[in-house]
Image (tube, rainbow, N blue to C red; front, top):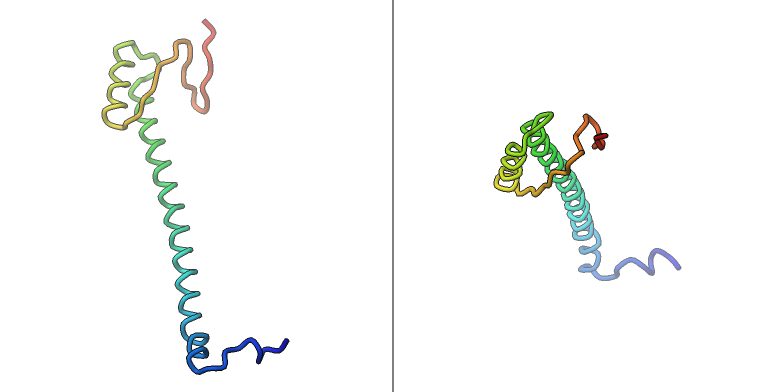
Length: 103
């Protein structure tokens, strides 16, 4: 099998091979790079915003919130952030993880 057998014979076929194929390849590569970077940026941005929303709710609660503060924080979380959370008695937030209290 020789290269001459694979290459186009007509002028139109050669034009397609020389002009259109590189243009289509460049477009495919640039679109794939754009969407990959775009989705990466959107994912990072959404994760950062979610962590800021949760941090705001945790800071609002404080170290030992009363039942009224917890109820108000739950209402605000649902109203402003569309976050539904429940308070588990005997659990508290530490800096890096959730730890159960010994009561």
